[in-house]
Amino acid sequence: MTRAKASPLLTTRYGIAAPNAGDTPAARALQLYGEWAEQETDLLSGVVTDGHHVLEVGGDHAAHTLWLALAVGDTGAVHVVEPRRLPFQQLCANIALNQLANVHTHHAYLGANEGNESLASETTRRARLDSLALPALHLLKVNIPDVLEDLLKGAGATLVEHRPLVYARLGGPASAEREVDAVKALGYRVWSHTPALFNPDNHAGVARNMFPGLLSCNIVAAHPESGMDFDSLTEL
Amino acid sequence: MGDDSTADEEPWWRAQTLRAELARLTRSSGATRLLALRALGSDADDDQVPTLDAWVDVHLAWSTWLVGIAAKERLGLADQICTRLSPIAPTRAARRRAEVMMRRATLLKGEARLADLDHAMSLLHAAMGEGDDPATLLLFAECAHRRAPLLPPDEAAEACSFALAHAFAAGQHAAWHIASLEMRIAIQQTYDQLTVARTPSDITTALRRELADARALLQTGSA
Image (tube, rainbow over all chains, first blue to last red; front, side, top):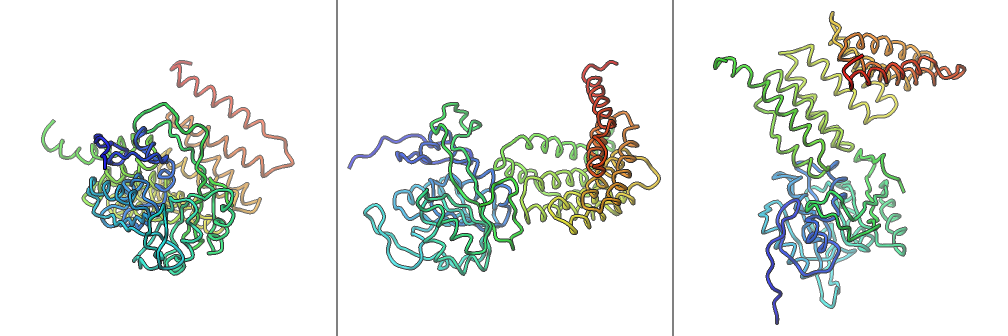
């Protein structure tokens, strides 16, 4: 086994991160810009506050976890569920490097039922979101495309009890309509949020745009009981 | 400057520091701004008028960056500070609470919005007293103007007249002249929409010209 040459730690907008050789957009953005999808956190900064409980599905190298952990503070909690083994280890490394005591990591795939899930030729535990039995939940942030429908099937009790805001990346043309309908079927209002992947005011001050013209197709959804209303966005 | 005067001025300096930091972080992105707002610390140990007043500014500004319940909760904190301000500066507290109510009204619709604006009007009456503080006069104008679209046409026109009178009065103070003109133009436009039979008012055109002159004067510093 060969080991990649060690690189220094990355200084990102909200903390330090271990370098990784991944070629995902998040990994490349953290490496070059010191941040990833910053406009998502900008929107969420209007709803997340001290003491909130947040669940992230998909670690994205803790790019947003670092901010969420600071935003909810010592009285809040951030749970991150990452189904893929190596990204899970990277996530844990970055949580540990930043000494975030209010972050809880879970190596699992969140789906409709309990069992096993095959991902990238490895088997991962499959669990229902309801089985986490979270004492509170203000925000459910789904970073992995194409998992939302399955995830919601195992999250009914939690969503009814806590009515969290849902922020999710849509899967694509083949699944977007079904995903939006699945959220609406829970009584939620849904808005489109399409932030550009490149932030000209990025943390590293890099002018090069390696995501030219690319937008992220996301939704933000709120239950009427939550009192949330995103007038500036397009309701779906 | 003696030790006593320095100690007396401490709340004033702390208030200025809070406001300067608030102005700085206003330019940050949302996520960074939230952390900077948290870094301002707590109002728990502040009990003087200048600092409590500055904390109302912080919470009012903070609420504008929040959505829904989070914004209402932040305004709740601003209201609590007004309660602490009330025994030591009742007039100031009434005016600040009116601002909180006006901000809360923007988060509501229909009758609920009107109720908060009505509450703000009553607080502004209490804040006004015998004086003619231009800031309060302008708040009066803004509050009345915001009530107008929520009222039946006759009452709306009356609210606009009330708003215009108070905006005009505020403009008699030189430092408030431009803000007064901006407010009068906005009110006049609302009034013109109410009276649809009339052509767009010449008054608005005249006010725009006066505003342009006032801004030019401010930039050049000479007539």
